[in-house]
Figure (cartoon, rainbow, N blue to C red):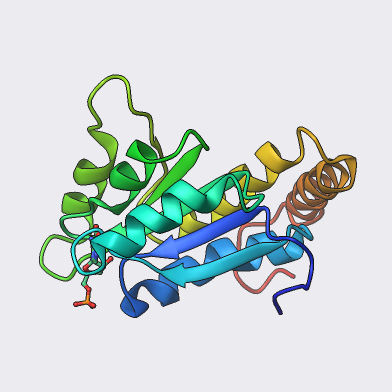
Length: 169
Ligand SMILES: Nc1c(C(=O)O)ncn1[C@@H]1O[C@H](COP(=O)(O)O)[C@@H](O)[C@H]1O
């Protein structure tokens, strides 16, 4: 559930079809109590909207943008070209090339415009949400505490379940 608080993280994606991956970024932000907004924005299909979104993001109070896209994934790099906010790129798995195309499109930025590129798919989206929260947490003690609690819980859950066999819980 999106909160009424001022969004700190913008989660954007090239198409509605990216949602099953990008919802994992949103799930992490919700878990850590970080206010966010979501939007479909495409460098290819809605270039004017992309420019408006990226140029207005900092002024609207966003601190980080998470951008997911598949295939010829120009969205994260183009957003990064229009804002000084940190941009985290999530390569969405494509049908034809399984997301390798998305990964290479996002990761190979020319020097001087940075995109922090995560892993392909669900793990990348989850970690984009986590990393966005860590960035917001630099200035927000509540979010920082939520990240620390999440990490401690994760560690404890592994230590509490040392037996790898599936029927061992
Ligand atoms: N890579 C981009 C961009 C962009 O980079 O601006 N806009 C849409 N797309 C991608 O096209 C794929 C197929 O989109 P459709 O499913 O809508 O045909 C999606 O993964 C989307 O991120």
